[in-house]
Amino acid sequence: RLNYLLNLLRDRDLTIKTLFKTLIGWPVGVLFAASSIVVVCIWRLPGYYVQLADMIYTLLIVAIIDGKTHEIPNRIMITLLISQLIVVICVSNTYPYIWNVLISIVILLLLMLVSKISKEQIGMGDVKLIVILNLIYGLSFTLYSMIISLFIMLLFIVPCMIRKKVNLKSQIPFAPFYTAGV
Image (tube, rainbow, N blue to C red; front, side, top):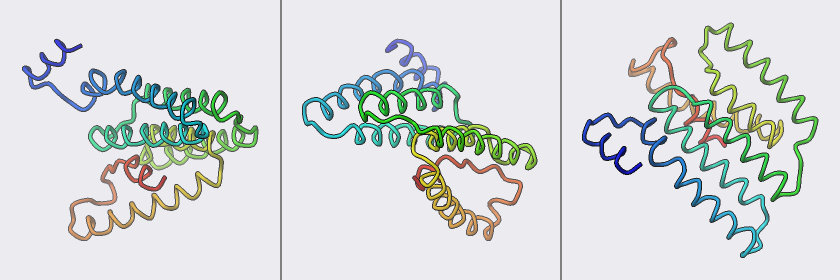
């Protein structure tokens, strides 16, 4: 991995995706797992802290990648879903309620419909991100985080539209605003 990273630096082919794949992926995951074990087993803190730390860490990575590339990789979404489910079941000793699963399916279908009608103004990565967090944290969390993130986005977009840096057809990454809303 180190040789690959040095070759990337020499070739100047270093993008946020290659950096994540090469450097951030597994070492940070190992450090996060080790710190989670310390938090839960040694300090005897509730598993909810691990769950929140995992969500925030993943959202920050998603926000950076979406801000740079305007896409959210499926690999990260699958990792977020699996890690949240593992923490919920094994560490927090809770289970996703059937109500959250049903509402997540409805939200998924609704956002997919809105995405198709709006000609993909809402990206499918954003849809998956919202649905995964709704599955784990529930409808009230999703609604509050959506309202706050849309308000933050509005505060950012209006001045940009006044200065004519963006227009109604501009693609704006939603994950950074959603992360701030969460």
